[in-house]
Every structure is written in structure tokens, then in C-alpha cells.
Length: 113
Image 1 (cartoon, rainbow, N blue to C red):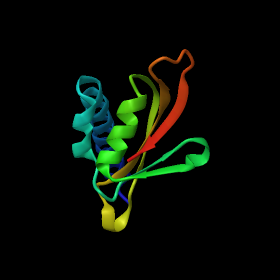
Image 2: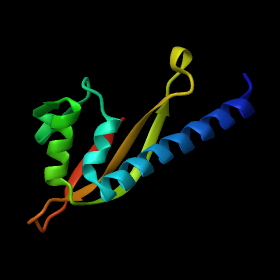
Image 3: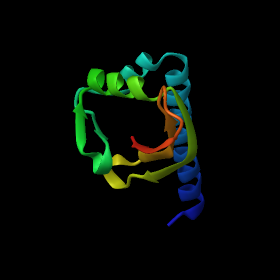
């Protein structure tokens, strides 16, 4: 096993994951509706305790998140590379908080892409 190559691939995937999430939140901050292009009709959002409310499709997801997230802060971005058939891809997890309009308390969130 070539660990140097594995490390380089791992670093490239990490950088790609971080760039994607930075772009997502930069886009969201500039014009939240523009993140619709980053979702597909097969996408879904679990919202509420234990993801109890399931929201499906990009338009419904964007409507929900833009109605809630006016301010956010990211605590961490983690990623897990795919292996074999999906080499060069990864799952990205973002953990943070959002502050809805009219609220004083921050709510935790996590996003997986």
C-alpha cells in the first residue's frame, strides 16, 4: 500500500470537502435561494428532534432553511472518503449553530452532504 499516495488523496479530498462547504455557506449568506442548485429532487432534510419532519426536494428544502437560518456559525467540518467504486468522493459533515429570526437562543444543526 502506498501511504504517501493515500495521504495525498486524503488531503485533496479534505480540501475539496472544505471548499464545497465554504462555497455552500458563502452562497447561502449572499442569497439563500441560490443554494437550490446544490440540491436535487431526491434530496431530503430531516428537521426537528431526531429528524422527525422530513422535507423532500430542493425547493421545499430551500424554503425551510431560508425561513430559519439567518445567522449561523460553523463549529467543525468533518469528512469521510468513499472507497473503491466511489474513489475520489467523500461524505461531508458540518456541525454548527443557527439563530432564527426573532430568537435569542442558538440551535444546533448538522448537515451531511
